[in-house]
Each structure stands twice: as structure tokens, then as C-alpha cells.
Length: 287
Image 1 (cartoon, rainbow, N blue to C red):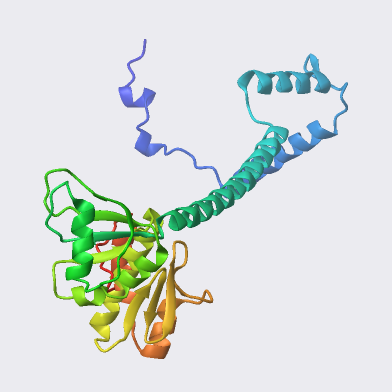
Image 2 (cartoon, rainbow, N blue to C red):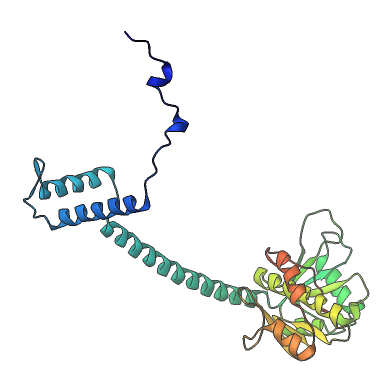
């Protein structure tokens, strides 16, 4: 056996770099594969592919798709139709729920229309009705006799200044009392209506906006009446979806900026963090 050196049997990789496929070669393979697929689609169902006909191959592929549970075009079309139907049904349900909430809030508002909440009064859990009657006469200076259905404290027991919910029999007594609450400014007492939860949330937002307006325009004549914020004669409301709007549905922030030169853009961005929850702001009847 002849003696041959090791390099004669092995060539270093660096000396024989791997041949890269040229772009023309890659394009040629793509063209060939395309021609093969075209030829396969042009073949009749009974043409032979090896030992199988094209129809047999198609049947095998169909069985394979069924076995693997792969989605077909028909499956995807059916799924898309179901999704579209669910979206439509969800939109209908949302409208029905919103309509129900509106009707429920109207009914609850009617049930509470003769209720008032008195706060800041030192009391025990007994003699509440007499205490409220005395407060109306001595503090609110109302000599007319009012008719109270019932009165009871709210919140946890043991606190001597828990708010008191008072149910009046006559609506005119409520109106008379609310006309006198201005004298409570500067005191620890307050009287306000017994609003529903939705109304309390909405009024809480309007109260926060009212404070921001007064920061920018101290001489503004501003008040909250039921569900409406009135700023220098401009009536605004709070919409859960649109935010601050006019009674005609226009952008309330834009109206204040154009008509009163009060720009609430930055304030509304800051308040949006708090508006994400259902916080209930403390308010008095003077607001």
C-alpha cells in the first residue's frame, strides 16, 4: 500500500465553499413546480399517478383532512356567518339592556321623588321624625307643617351623624324644603334629593366638571339642575358614551371653548381616569 498523506484524502471546507443556489436556478425550480401542479390539475380523474389515479389521491387527501380536523373553506364560511350573527345579536341585546336601564331608572326616580336626605345632624336612632320636624322649623325656618311618612338613618350603626333618609307624603313639602336649603351654606348641614345610583354617578361627574370650570372661570354662573349642568346659560349633560354634550348632542367641551373661552380639554383628560369608575361624589342641595 502506497503511503499517501492525509490532506490527499480530505480537503478543508474553507477550500471548497458550498455552492449557493443562483436566483435563476431558484426561479427555474418555482417554474417547474408550477408546471407540475398545472399538469396535475389538468389530469383526468382516472389518470394514474404511480399506482393511484387522481380521483383516488383526492379521496385520500379528503380523508386526511377529515382525520386531522382541518378547516375547509365551507367550515370557515360557516364560522364567519356564525360570528356575524353573534355580533348582530350582541348589538340587539346591548340596546335592549340600555333601554331597560333607562326605564328602570325612570321608575326608580319616580319612587324616590318625595325623598330627601338630611346630613350633618347629631342624632341617636330614636325620635328621628321629631328631630327632622324640629330641624325644618328651627334651621330651615319653615312654619308650615310637613307630613313625614317615615325617616331612618343610613349607614353603619353607632355613628351619631349618619345621613337620614326622609320620605315625605306630599311633593309640595319637598319643593318647599328645597327652596330653603340655600341658608345651609357655610354650615355642616346639607339636604339633597334621594337620587338613584345612575343619577348619583352622573351628577358626580357633572359636579367634578363644575369644579374644573370654576377653576378656569371664577365668575361663571354655574349650577346643576337634575341631570343638567348650566354654565352661563349653556345647558350641558353627561353621556356615558359621548361624554359632555349639549342638549342637542353637540360636543360640550367644544361649545365651552368657542362660546366662553373655557378649555376643558386637559381637565377632561385628567378626569377620565376617575370617570372610569362608579364613584359617587358628595354633593349638597346648593350645587
